[in-house]
Length: 169
Image (cartoon, rainbow, N blue to C red):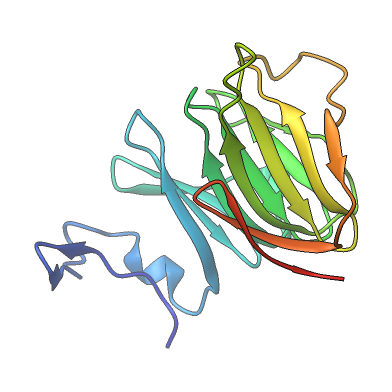
């Protein structure tokens, strides 16, 4: 059965007293997990986004019934959520979500260091839309959030370690 296990020192730690939220993830299709600098775990499933803080689970209402594909933490500690059919979101420090592209499938997210500029770029791969580079800022509210550059060589990319590792035409 699908679920969540905690691994510590190479051993599975499924102590329900220490980790009371584990049973709540039984049967969930977990796609991605990340951790904030404050120690809050973000767990993306095919049915929503959850936080775990102080061993308590919370479901983020903005992501109810939304399939989470990727949770990406940028070097500036901003949190980016890639979804299936609902596009790209950014979370603020209170886990409030801002959506930037509706009705898009996000395949992967990464960060590109721009040595010529002072800010890094967020690289986002969309199914059927291609690869986009966005100016990465600390402000969720900075508008407009439009692509700095669109790469049109292919319609699907997977990004790993800041390198394009594959594409389908």
